[in-house]
Image (tube, rainbow, N blue to C red):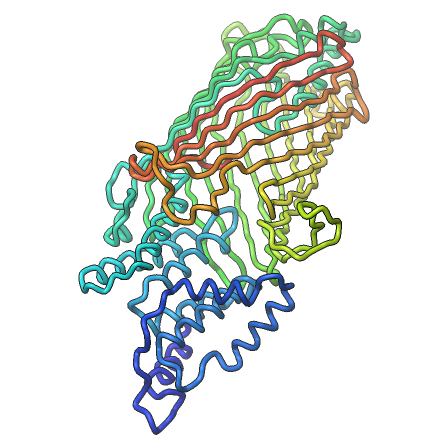
Length: 595
C-alpha cells in the first residue's frame, strides 16, 4: 500500500480525524464481514455503471466520520473497495488494504482481497501469487481466532470460502505431491513450495483433430494435393477415403513446481497415437498409415500485476518433439526437432469492462527429411519448416445489460447483471513448408459469447479460413498453386445449459466420497463449413451434444477432475450417403493447462 496513504490512515485512526477532544475511537463492535458484500450489492443492484459510480462518490465523501469506531470504518472502506472493483477502478486494492489495516484481526477482508486478485484481476488467468498471499493470511487469522476463543459462526463461512478460493486457484495444477498446499490448506502453506502432478487422457474417433479443428480445410487441401499428384479430379471414392475418422489416443503428464516467489515451472511428457490418420501418398487416399508423436518439454507461467497499467501473463515453453508417419511416401520416417512457444497476454479494465490482448508465437524447427529408403531427389524437396503466429482481442462487458424479461412473458427490457458479454476477434497465420510446396493458412475470426444471466450461455463465432498455396522451384522462386488454395467460412453456434452452477456453492462443495461437485454443463454445438472458393465437395454441417463435468477431489488433496464427453454428427452432404460421420470423444483431465 502507498506509504503516504498508510500514514494518513494511521493519523486518522489514532487522532480521530485530528480531533483534539478524543485520544481515538474505540475498536468498535464486532461485525460480520459479509455485511460489506450485502451493502455493496445494495448499492449496485439494478443500477447502471454510471449510477453505481454515483453511489461510490457519495460513499467517498467522506468515507467515514470522526465518531465511527475502527470496525465501522473498516466495513465502510470494504464497501468502497467492492464498488471500486465493480466499476474497474485501479485503486480498489488500496481500499481493501485500508479495511484490513483498520480491522487487522478480521479475516473476511483478506478473503475479499484474495477474491479480487483471484477473480476480477488477471490476464488469461488469476493473479495467483497475489491472491494466495491474502488467502493464506486469512487462514492465519482464523487459526488465531480459534486459539483466542473469538471464532464466531460467520468465521466458519469465511473459512469455507477461503478454502474454496484456494481450490479454484490451484485447480489446474493436478494432484498435490507435497502436503503444504493440499486441501485442507493451513497458513503454513503460503511460503512452502507446491509440487503437483497432472495427467490427461483423451480418446476420440473424429474427423477433427481437436476442439475447433478445421476438417474441411484439411480435407480440401488434401483433395487439391491429390490433383497435384495425379493430374485429375478426385473421384467420389477418393473423397470418401480422404474424409477419415482416425482413432486418436492422446496422453499428457506434467509435473508442476509452484512457489509464490517464482510462479509455476512445468515439466511435461506427452504422446499422440492416431491410427490410419495420414495419407501415405496424396495420390492414393486409400493408403494410410499411423501417426505417432512423443514430446518432452519445460514451460514457465506467471501472471504479474503491473497496475495501474495492466496485468501481464508470461507463458513460455520449449519442447523436443519426435514424430513418425507425417512425411509423404515415408510412413516410417522419424523426425526429431525443437518447438519454441510464447503465449503472452495483457489485460486491463476500461471502466467496468475488461480488455485482454493475447498473442502466440510457435516456431517448429523441423529438419530436412533424411530417412532410410528416401528417393534420390533434389535437396530442396526435403525442406521442412513451420511457424505459427496469432493475435486475439477479447472485450468483456461486465456492465449490467438491458435484456428482455422472457421468463416473465414480456419483451420489455430490464437491467440485469450477467456473467459477462464477451466480444472477441483474432488472426492466426500458419506458414508451413513441405518439400516443393508452401501453404500459408490465414484464419480470421470474430464472435460473441453471453454468459447468463440465467442458466444458459450462448456463443456465436464466424471464422474465415484463407489458404494460399505456392509451388517452389529449385531456385526458390514461388508461384501460386490454385490446387492448394481456397477460402472457407465456418459459422458456429454453441448453447450451454449450466446444470450445476458453480456460483451456487461459494464454499467447499458437499462431497461424495473423495469428490465434491464443482460444475456440470450440458453443451450443444452446431457448425456449418461453407467453401467460398476452391474445392467445394467437402462442405459439411455438424451438430452434437456434450457434458462438461468438474469435480473437486476434496479427499485427494484438492485435486480437480474435469471430464468431457460428447457426440457430434457430421454430414459432408455433397458425398450423399457416403458423407455421414458419427464422431465421439471423451477426455479425462486431472488438472489441466490451456483448454
